[in-house]
Image (cartoon, rainbow, N blue to C red):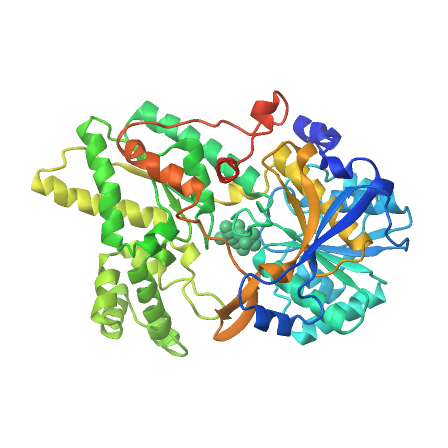
Length: 552
Ligand code: FBP
């Protein structure tokens, strides 16, 4: 394989561990804190997780290692969307496992949860692991989105685990995957398999965090990658002075990515889905908000700008949510075939007009035709509209264009409006992890093994105090059940990890709110540039603005 100079150099990078894990395995001891309770619905969660609920918080510290010496055979999977640093979780896990006992074995199950179900795995050795250290991507063993949730699936996983002599399974994933890790841990404990289950917090979306988990891994690198690109576009906009750029960024359920990129680049507009929902903003209100910025900037001779749109925005607009619910009903069952058989768009449009309520149709009719058609194109396996596929960057630029045409006719707007559209998502999910993510992920993996070695199950690997230098990081673990509550999923009440949305009274949003009026009218762009891996610490080891603001 041809290696780029950076890839070769990154192989040599030695990720930093928290100070307390640096003295060698023999000097890592554990201390237990108070028993925990779930964030809500305590009785129900306790009833559903009788073997793993209420366990104590765990912290590692320097001292005599008292864990029981036994051969460990650990299976690991990567689950869900890619996030920079996944390879380092695996290499940290591998290094701790081998440093504890050379006879220990790490198996990598391929393609996410499917690997556990199909018993499809590789056995890691030094050569294998060394080829992936400090690199982006999940290609070491691949990933997948199969949900592990039924008794039958758990029984197959337990059977395969026994067949391979596994003592533990590590699930590297987001909130759904770690919810599954908690349920699998409970199953393994209830069936007295002796197999432990540990989770690691991953997702570029940044929505797996809480008072214990300060950040999910991958968010740092992905947002830095998008911010570099957005900064470059801002420079281009400021150079050519002729386009408004509408940039959609990933984050299907929460707007953390959009907010972080806005804090990094100070665009003219950034929509925050959680605010749209809280203020029950309509499409027209959002359109006017953007059009006001375009109009004011045009009045100053600036016919250009940058707007960041979070991927999941439309689901936060109440009237849009109602429209989607009606469309899902309208096309339920065999009605999709009836709709698809209609000869042309006009016939389909008439069918939609007849089928929707007047309110829903009013919203539908506001949309550009391209977006109207998208709503009827792609369905998920349950027959629902896939909102993340809606080109919301084009939706808002079209709506703004129409609004500006009205304002021009009324004589209030005299500028020129030309739009460019971008979607940044996959560009950031497999970048070389920043030094922060390389260190954080390696520590999460190393720490996951310490939790296994000390006999814990149903825990999430936790590394905290991460806005400080790695030396001061605190390693430990948190029962996953502590993060759970009951939520309605597919018509049933289910125990799940509570997703973290952008908090409108949190410091990152407050900072943005205090500055956005100025950013909307003036040109205050900032240009973060590319992630730096080598050089001064103040350039290479920066955490996200979100984390810095949250931790004061
Ligand atoms: P996870 O929640 O699994 O980490 O994935 C998040 C994400 O990157 C979203 O931002 C995006 O909407 C989605 O994955 C895309 O998924 P896919 O890779 O299946 O297209």
